[in-house]
Length: 585
Image 1 (cartoon, rainbow, N blue to C red):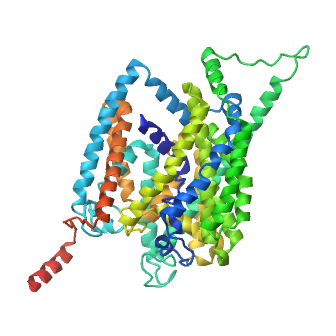
Image 2: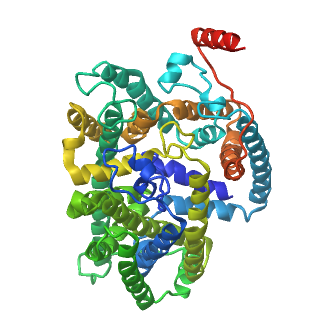
Image 3: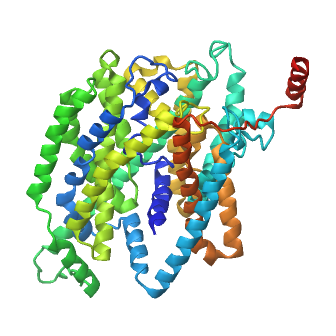
């Protein structure tokens, strides 16, 4: 079923600290260019507001390069090196299981369950809409744990999406996010707020990066970078070690037998593997076609991108395209070994290098964010394609057909995704702000990374840099301890998952933990049913509430507003309101 692949992506992305793989950048680097996000940062001058035309053009000139960059290596990766590609393998086994009588029956039941919870989630979203006439109204502003806890972002906001995500994500992810929220909003931010007037000037408000917001954003960035750097070095070392082992073993296979020595033996392929190899190699994609396609698209892109982003010079783009195939290979190989995509880490590397190269006087912030988009699209699509080639190999699908399907799917994505984002952007004026229902936290994070790369540390409030160093080192240390402990390390929280609520708050962590609790109880009562239908229930909850946002956006664009505002006040405030209304009446 379709939700199973998305489930794997969410679970496997815990390796990225639950940082979504957002190649289009609609919640990260691309939205981070907008004035709406720039107004929340320390650099408000360098921005580029989203427009449907240039977004579609940008995606068309950068989204296909990754597909061509690794096509010549597909035989080496899948057949010669026999890389696992766990997500691709799991998807293949799932697809193959549908072609058995038992699998077909189970799939039908799963579809029914998904449809049922999709409907419930959609109707729940529709019901909630009636009570959200203005900001801070409705169930998403329900102070379930008390008003003081609500002020510090501790509440259950009745989001079916996050409950569903909590059912899909591993328990350790949800616990990590909750621990991060408790550490930041429960302990650190109240203590730092007490230093107002000492560490930072009074009266700056909640959104100023020179005040409390600076600590929230930059300490979160420090943890994300620390976790990303550790995993980058770890996966890269695994990649090079695995590559060295593969090449050494291949060389041993080609050695002639010598008297007194055992001749190297090549493992005999099973009939299934022989058949898969035959099908996989039958529809060849010519190497000249892949290389020519990459060069042609790179040339078009180099000529086009400077017209979209005048800050991104043509020589920056050429350097990226010269380096990108090597990084794409490293990411695809590492993903085959560990199921670990480092696309966002390579994107952050581009932010810092290109942003610093351009400098603040030449639009380094936009140049860095645009370079991040180019790099992430190439590196991420390369590893995704290899995952799909592995799926095709195990399901006897034609590689050429899969490649063409990828081209078609990418083309559709370059039009559909920006269109959906544009509806959201026009329908919700507060999209991307910390008070919004859709805060897009990674947009401000990516933008501030670009500012940090361009301006250095001079923008940080007092003692913020010291705290950043501490949390950067802590993220590396926690990961190191987790890996050293092996299986026992599964109880140690993930630093990048802990970093997310530093900026957002704990409300979504509570929703996710509710989802985990539901799944945990279900597994205790009937583990077989929970394993079979848990992903379907979670996907229904996510899709139903998610799909409702499209009608909600259309209603907002049409000027139709909810009729009721459900708000919660303290007893003292309520008494004042009653008195005011009585006097006014």
